[in-house]
Amino acid sequence: MSRETVETHTPVGSEEIARTFEEAEVPVDLSGHGLEDWVTLAIFWVMCGAVFLQFFTRYVLNNSFAWTEEIAIYCLVAVVFLGSVGCVRLTRHIHVDFLYRMISPPAGRVMATLVDIARIVVFAYLALLVWRYSALIHDERMTTIDFPKSPVFLLVFASFVLMALRGVQVLIANIRRGYSVLERPGAFDRSQEG
Image (cartoon, rainbow, N blue to C red; front, top):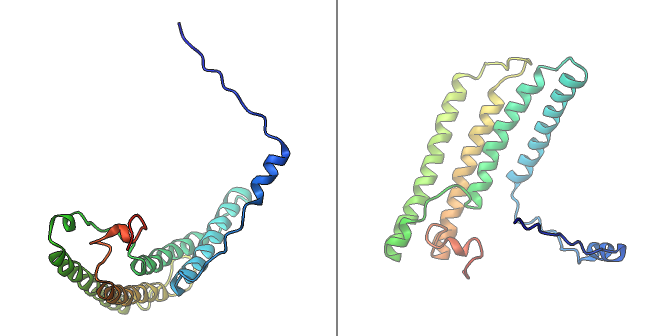
């Protein structure tokens, strides 16, 4: 014998629906965003425009603009690398904090500082490699439009430099604070008091 569940719906009046829109407005705080966030947002919207134009010309006009795909790809590269700068600033890159639970706090502090220094060194080295690579291909042009590729690689270079500088800022903040996100992740996501 199967039992059917009967759903009951309580009628909701228009007055009750209207009251749901009367909630207090929360003030918007944009102070936590860096310059790289705003540049990333602008490039993201350029990318969206290029993708929409590609879609519109391909499926509506049946005659696509080939250059929109290439522009969207280079915009995506810019969004990824400039977005990574913000991730360094906010310490939002992937990290493993399991080991810090197993070792003593002083050893964890030393290890976290070494990780911060290693991050700066890696980003600086990657900036150097991109700089060298962009010097090798400085005269290459994009495929569909007659524009050099070097600004894209210079943007990647600048992103790695900014990541290294933001890494220095994170290192200094962690030293002043006395702990990092690796040692006390709950203090950074507000799950425990700081």
